[in-house]
Length: 127
Image 1 (cartoon, helix red, strand yellow):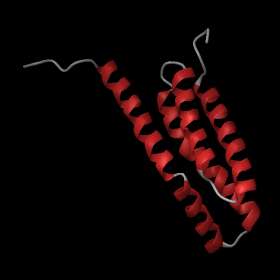
Image 2: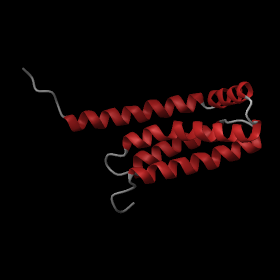
Image 3: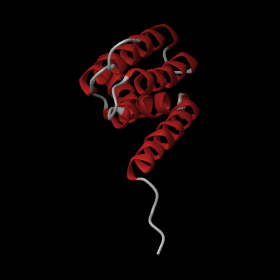
């Protein structure tokens, strides 16, 4: 990719778009989130880190879980309605369906972010 890469806003929009698209399709056809949503979550994290400008790593790490939660909550609200107990149950079930992918991508993303932050800070001076 030529040029400096995506700004923070671009990373958020693209990650949210792809997560909403594929998670919506999976929720529509499978009636629950699973492997497709999990893989897309991991892929958009890697893509956000790879194609974002310098300084966009934090946004690339934080956006996927929030975009997934918002997508699932909106979809469940539209399909279940305003029934708090059923809405909560469906939301938790969707989160549980992608928990391994969410944990793996979050651990990797935070590792990359904290590693970059430590490299920018430099080594500690010895006394």
